[in-house]
Amino acid sequence: MFFLMHCLHHPGMDAARDEHRPAHRAWVGSGGGGIVSVLIGSALLDGGASVGNFGILEAPDAATARAFAEGDPFHRAGIVSSITLTPLPDSFQADRITNPMSPRL
Figure (tube, rainbow, N blue to C red):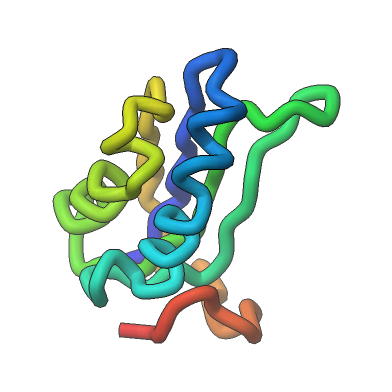
């Protein structure tokens, strides 16, 4: 299954984001230790300021996708204010993403 993960961050978290970014990138690159595949993701911006992050995840189910999102160092450090996971349709064309951020499941 594929999910759109949308994470909003608390305001004023720039320093904390900078501190935890290397661990966040390692978490994403490993797919949370292999529990999901991260096909693509990036920061969410508002007027040039980071306000969150998003990703397209491949996971066996919503509970696994949520475990990945909640295990992210940004979430564990209290940076993330909300996580939304939206299931994508079976017709989602994941094969069009040519360079996934973590190994495919």
